[in-house]
Length: 343
Image: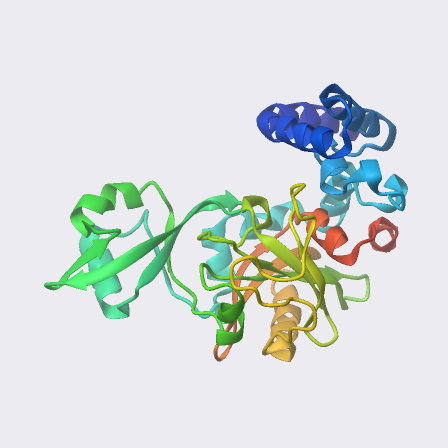
């Protein structure tokens, strides 16, 4: 049954991301001087042979990656079974519904929010005037991959609120297309120094083992590039983090095939990644470990967390976290490591 569902998933996502698949095949065709049809066909051979999603063929640069062994990597079907085995379905709602997540994990979140579906314009105006923010973030409760998330600019004038240069009266109908409006988290100056265009967050993937011990599988930080979001699926750059000391290791990389393939420096601020020390790392790890026990029925989560001037602020948790960013950061597959948790 899983294989049938996965086949349907591959067909649906291939159609959904057809533009991406075509552009990737064109990029590879030009780079390696091979037929474009070749790169539209071969990824599906890997799917039939190794259960590898066709997009992963491009993400891992399989054509020229001589060290790539499909059996070492956690393909999409494996991750579906992994998440299904470890995360009780009755509790995953606390992660895909951002409203429920805010309610459950508010102790670890250093920023306020308003439910746009349950507030009126006067309540929202008062909240904004009291907060006096320069920016706010609006979200849909089921937003993923940076989509359904937007930053809006705020100005206060004559005891009224202007959002993206429109009065709150004129903007309120637009805001109600979203579900949450949140305070914009102020990041630590050392993070802002690398990329000031957006909030740059750390992703930490964890597993609670059978002894109820938190295991950290890997950690990366995502940096935006002239964008309001840092997300890896929205053009951001990710860098591996040494989980023992919070120091950046190696070059940055993008999810999609790109030139250059690796980024030793941030492309807009020219700050070198390798060796850069992140602040408040012990606080971050301690916060993540505590958060793992809030809903222990969800045993494996990909946490997104921001580093602030005074500590950290939890942004969200992903019960179906993407293995790609961790494996690309570690430059190796993690399938065998994950298998021991589901045996």
